Amino acid sequence: MRAADRLSARFFRIGLLPLLLWSTPPARSAEKLLAPTDLTALDRQNRMWRLIRPENTVEANLEAWRTAGFSAKEVEDLRLRLTELWTVRVDRNFGWLRAETVEKIQALDREFIPRVRAARLYAAVGIRTGTETVATLAAVDQQWRRALLRLLDYDELAEFRLTNFVAARDLAHLLEGITLTTGEERRLFQLERDFRSTYERSPAGVPRAQGPAEREAWLDHLSAMRQELGNERFAVYLRRANAEFDAMDAALGRLAETRPDVAVDFWWLRQKLASQYARGGGAVSSREWQDVVANTQAQARALLGDEVLSSYLESNNARWLGGR
Image 1 (cartoon, one colour):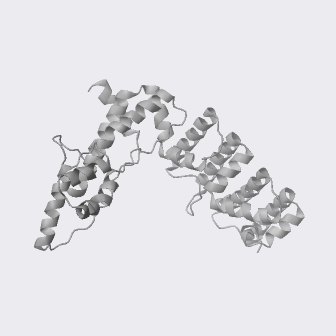
Image 2 (cartoon, rainbow, N blue to C red):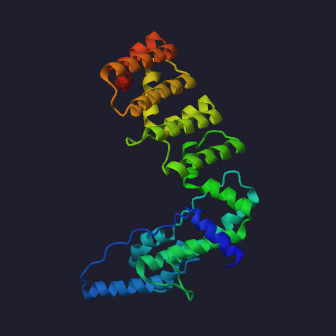
Image 3 (cartoon, rainbow, N blue to C red):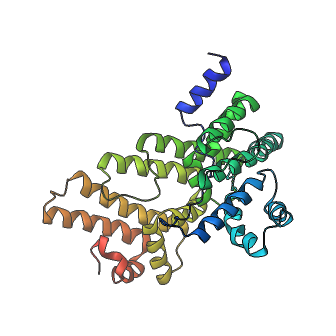
């Protein structure tokens, strides 16, 4: 096996590219029984599809149909379908990659778009265009991966993989608009990737079935992110990532102007309380749990002050703390 093929196989195993978002638009259902007029119309549509070229734009292909003598209605009837098949959204997160590396990847994407269109067309209507053998979308994806491996060196591939890992994509969306240095962005992506590689899910929310060990790991992960971002930026991230914090922060905001670090610390008390309950397996006695909640309330009072805590306990958001 050649070195390039060994490298290719390695990256396929470790999931280099969950990257190509060129799925085929859903095909419209066909009638089970077709009248002669329907068969004639279908035959004309097939002739139209055989005339188009994947390298040409939608408008250029529409003009080719008109030039071939197809009616304005026939052209308009297929315009939407052609537009769906020809619109290829290539979603990339380039992060801190060098400009020349980005340009190489974008040029490769442009080269492969006609192949994607041809594969989509064949999958949708069963018609091959041109003289070349049309590959399936899966085959085009594999061809693109191999081409990328030949195009970039090892370090560039590693950076591209990190910035386009599923976890990095999700995190980049949550961090959109937050100013980050290159080093901060890289470290945050690495934190997210490492957490996902262990627990295979997004750490943004807490699933009901989360066990004590996973909850502690989740809080440790968020603590590391908080340290990297600082309280103000972390609060912005957490509001987007966690509906529970967003609701709590909103409830506190209606009562008083709350600093980001205070809001996050208060939310952390809630998570620690849930962790204590989880570690007890739900078998904590009523008296013991009352003591735990009372201790948490004392910490919350020290954090928020008597007036704000008393008002908060009257809100619908305070049930976790023994409030309303």
